[in-house]
Image (cartoon, one colour):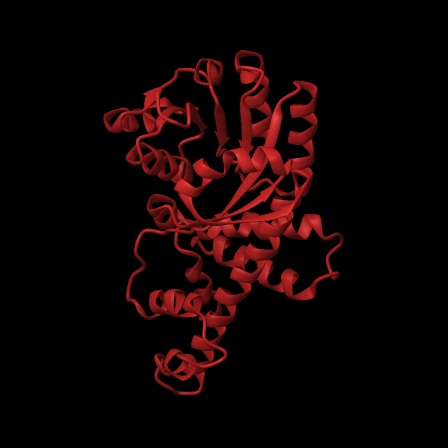
Length: 287
């Protein structure tokens, strides 16, 4: 048993698997569960215990990390597993499920008297594997302080958004909206370059090293210059979902017109069949 006790990861999609690989590489005792067990089995070769059910996974758990697709999945898994976990286990909600979804999870956790906090992941598969995520946390400060050594293994920085679970989720919606805006804005810049008959790389050269520079523009701009996209680290459909959650959280359409416009661009890109590609594929909407 490691110094962190038994750490359980419920959900081994892109991010859940990356977290499991990172923690296993740091000598942490990890148990994993996934609805489709075949996706979890490869982690057994790295030293993880693969559980057949959520209830089996959380037995004797010290920390439970939830990296699931949506609020329905989180609520369902808590319902299946809550009574099998030790009373002092800490449950960490890490799934991007929006404000309403988080409120549902908080209510269900309260029904089962679970110690719940959140640590929203800002970053993609690569940073998760390297332990360089930024975590946006919410919940009881003492519980989060107790988790600090474990969270430090998977992240370079923790930003506590507030003492209530849900604050981190709100902050992540803001951050992902900004990322969507940056990427769509970079795509528009490339489209304008083509229309005006300029070399595409000139935009990145112009902002490089200046006050308007951002590493994100260079990263996504580099993809826009490529003939073919590499496998997506941040799938377009995932960010589109996050933008929809942000729009839901901020009220009626029109309250934030730039958010509305950016979400529409990502919706159009997904309708064009770009959903499985990197979010930089939004530039094709301008073509």
